[in-house]
Length: 637
Ligand SMILES: Cc1ncc(C[n+]2csc(CCOP(=O)(O)OP(=O)(O)O)c2C)c(N)n1
Ligand SMILES: CC(=O)[C@@H](O)[C@H](O)COP(=O)(O)O
Ligand SMILES: [Mg+2]
Image: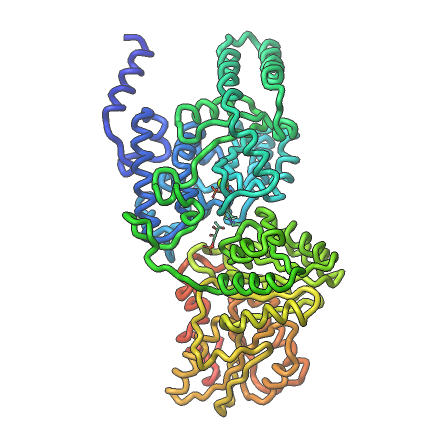
């Protein structure tokens, strides 16, 4: 039997053997499997994804869509020497399963468990931290450049979705990457979806090229013919390379944006067909220059509820696998209230415009979108653009409201400062997911917005406690305040007790006759109320001060603090530059003679439940009460 036949029979034998993730040494063993075995593994992976996410919550639909793509990548590239960089990283679950994390997979997104995003600290196969969109091409560019400098013949592969392609950083990366002779491969995972439908001119452009099946088929034939021509030394290889390019240009006169930017464009290919995927990836590797591979996938592939409703299953909480129904369904949350109130105001005032950066449903703007269609703008994953766009609308007399997650706003600091604040333009921000977010972890915590915005002159920040207060703040922000006005509110529901829910636009002072004043803002006031009750039961009487307008500091708040022997500020935000530290400065300047201390978040907050993270940060009721007891007895840290 010749070598080829032997290999063939080995393959057939292997194909008859069933394989399981748990029996394999991954990712290495993947390369020895037959396609039949790979497809079998894909089924096992999908079942694992659905079952696990049904218990932990997570990004299901995006992951179901890239099972074959991930398998093909790990068969064609050699991680960790080759670097696979996942954009956003929310679709990296299969990658985790194929790189030896099956046993830990049930701990997904839990405290001390594996992350829902790539984390080099978790595995050498996670090339780079991600969570925010559109960074992968820049990361891969840097890695490919480093490989060249170190004379390593490895590959840097960025895997990026069509939604993430709407982010501006992508074009900075393409601009840089397209001109270098590096082993840089960009895989465009095109499923026609961002979280909701992908929007904008780029989405339209991708739609126009993704249907061109003829392009790819003929192309493979050309590549194969040329690649199989015996190599007769370098000069001929050069001629062949030139003829490849000439042939490509002749056959495919219609070049893409990516070709024009210096990338070889390959595709589109069926992202659920392993053979086709591996073929295109091998061709991509053969170029040794920047290549973009366009892959068509179906978001939610293989689990009917997710295929039918990819938006709802993008990020989902625990659900019933049989029905697809969420375990707990929440009708109202801060985002919904914000969105509904904005829609109501928008109906009455034609100047109001609402802007989202691809988070229409997450921020509750779907209500505005359906009621005031022409004044609703989904600008794609483009927070920087969104802020400058809002500034520009304001300069033309509109009343723009940009609803954005706290952590994603971090990108747009200069736009807030340079485009909004310097001109004192009236722009309202709904800062959603403010504070601790829980299971998404470090990349998504909303803990920096207060420090960030309060460093900008003439800005205003509100932190409403409850829905009613949120509505009032929004009206005030639109009709009474000027300049940059932010309203920050958390993920989730109003948990404040009716007795503490008197809406205020400034501050609420709860007097019990104590000599200690506890101060805070936002949702952790609920924790403070519980702490105060517990402390009272132990004979420690505390007053409370809750701020609704947190910045600029209210003179009456600083004045109220002067009445006390001891003031303790609890803040669900970072300590540096936060309100607690600003209050400390103000008290010092005012000649306050009592004791002042604060508890705020320090460092990056890892994934855990919101309650768990509050506890670790010292911001739960029990930790607050412990801290106060320590302070009373003179040993607070
Ligand atoms: C800067 C930033 N803004 C918004 C998000 C929220 N976000 C996460 S995934 C996503 C959609 C990504 O779509 P795509 O890249 O096509 O991936 P798919 O889920 O379709 O696979 C968005 C908007 C984010 N992670 N980062
Ligand atoms: C991956 C990503 O950035 C988003 O999908 C984010 O996880 C959404 O968070 P929410 O679930 O709070 O909308
Ligand atoms: Mg997509």
